Length: 58
Image 1 (spheres, rainbow, N blue to C red):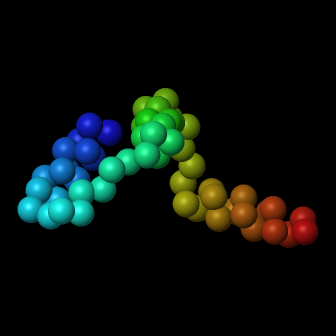
Image 2 (tube, rainbow, N blue to C red):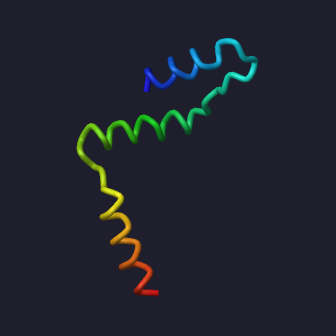
């Protein structure tokens, strides 16, 4: 997350439009990093399969 913030600051250093994250956005990013760290991820292929299964039940 720190790398993302550093990147955004670097990319916007010559701009007056520096984006400021809201606290809830920072919380979401931190949770996403934790999910990746602990292997709580799903492949696009598996996600597509789950979506199709869910849609077929409607």
